[in-house]
Image (tube, rainbow, N blue to C red):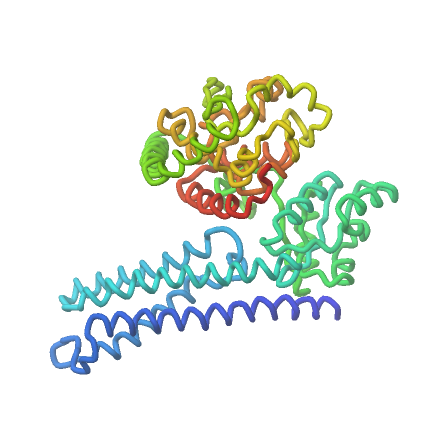
Length: 483
């Protein structure tokens, strides 16, 4: 009975959210098609499409277009609960459905030699598509706000070995906006003391053994079971059958291909679902495209921001004696050293005073971070808070020692401690920003910083770069994790 209530609760919030999306989509499409009609034809009731003996009015065709457009959004599953709230798949489906619909209209008009008012279509598509994306983004922000307080989220029980359970639970807790609220753990390899340590560390109770997960998930009202690891495939298959009909979803974290992300594709062979992992690619057209993107955007930013650059330079120069630009040796593409440019935010003898502050280091691994570093100047604190000290790195982008988006540029002494796996960060040019910048900045642990950088290197795309740049603006404005 409890499992049934879980299914009802999960269905309720998802259905409510889908209905709200549907209503908003309908209003946006009505606004787009009627707006395009009034802009193109005004109040001319006689405007009609000439189809020989049949001449439907453009007003009726506008309303029909809105209905068909709404149907296209529905048929492309743009409101599917599995894609809403996180990632860009929701937006991609909205764009795909809209562009395909208008492409089909254009093809049909061409084949039937129908003289459709092109101005009407050229107004309706961009206006409607833009507003659809804006409305979806606004609803996503509302959904994220709800999920920050563990509302409108799936209640999840995580299952597996202690190490895998710990890693997956931390990831789900860190990414609250993804909509997974961990309410219990079923761990296979811990005693009572280990279970207590896990509970203290994660703030989630250990419910029992994975063999009893179906009953335990029902007792805590879980809507999903997330498998962090299994010893045998049969265990996963059996769990799937046990959850059948309970209203509880099965989620699998494929640890064997961790970090491969969008390079993973499933292919059914002989009754087995084989995971194909594509090799990371950063050659040919991809490399040229990223280079051109960097050069064009960096050049434009330098021109637009030149008054701000000059103002900051004057503030640094006249508020503290010393050079305006601080050149710091960093390690770039394939281990090549380069001088990374920054506006100076510390006193001139900051490097020589580092040794006396090592004991106050707040970062893990080879990083040095100190929230109240006494070497930072008064102007420097403001520049660091909003990452304005990083702007001279636009010139690093122009001379190709850096990229707009990429792994964090490491110091030479950090690279000296790299193991082979971590050294893969050096296979791409370091970036002014990256996943590390939009995921917490200085608040990140060393392990999280490495994980995010490696994920970026292995799964880079222009689309991902654009999303990171957009999120960087938000991270900079909020100044979260900056010191």
